[in-house]
Length: 87
Image (cartoon, rainbow, N blue to C red; front, top):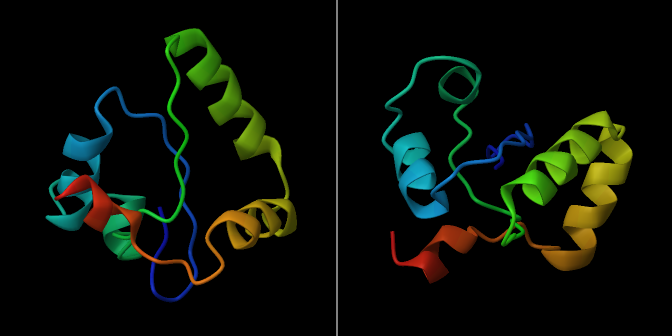
């Protein structure tokens, strides 16, 4: 997830569509609410929750520059991908 100002947030929801909607509605107070992190700019789907958790941990260890490179390679305009999820 990202904000218009470029703040990035990585999370591993059990239900992507519901969690993105919660971010957009600012349901939970905290980091994402404080920084207006409401755009889904990148996601990966996994069949096994253990693989998803491992990937989340891996991405969180990356430096910001590496995360931005991944994001720009796959979504250079940082388009809000939640539109394709019909949220």
